[in-house]
Amino acid sequence: EVAVLRLGHRPGRDDRMTTHVGLTARALGADRVILPENATQSRETVRDITERFGGPFEAELTDSPYGLVRDWDGRVVHLTMYGQEVQTVEAEIRTAHREAPILVVVGAEKVPFDVYEAADWNVGVTNQPHSEVAGLAVFLDRLLEGEELEREWEEADRRVIPRSTGKRVEPADDAGDTDRGSNGR
Ligand code: SAM
Image (tube, rainbow, N blue to C red; front, side, top):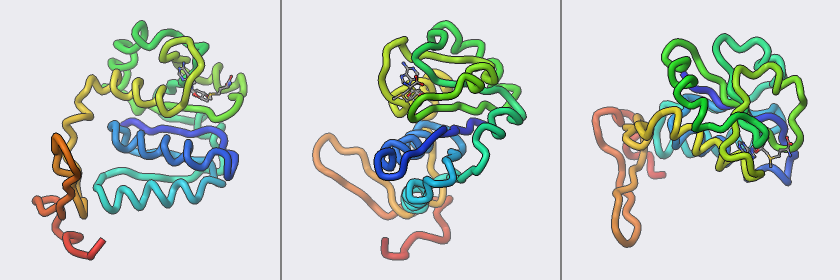
């Protein structure tokens, strides 16, 4: 299992970024995202996309993000520009992932030092400042070695047909899509 925890959410200012953490977690192979309790709008958006484009993927809220990090029954990866280089630790983390659920933690503003200490790995996707969305995307791709790109989506209403030009979206109609094929969305 791979879960992504978003720490911190300033309503208004962080709405898009928090939503994009959720959408990126879903698209790039995590099983669920856990958002701060005030990020209800972002959770709704992620759930709505999952309803339309498929899953399985869970979007949850927590009122105790630090408790979740502390009590996680598995291994914790905190993404930070100050951490060890992803290319140095990725193999070790992949090995751990075969045996235990991984919690990937990303911040918004300053992350308390407790999180650095609670993490099994503090991982930098480069040691340059950038974005939680970019860091998460590269990290998940390294963890899952590109297999996330081949994923089949279940219970989707619709599916994008890849095109060299233009946009094509069709109702999803494969075996996994038994009960939501034609609700008009
Ligand atoms: N300045 C804040 C601090 O010192 O904790 C971080 C702000 S940054 C905009 C928000 C989040 O993006 C960070 O908490 C981290 O999870 C992620 N991030 C930014 N740069 C990163 C990097 N080079 N590698 C991994 N994650 C990064």
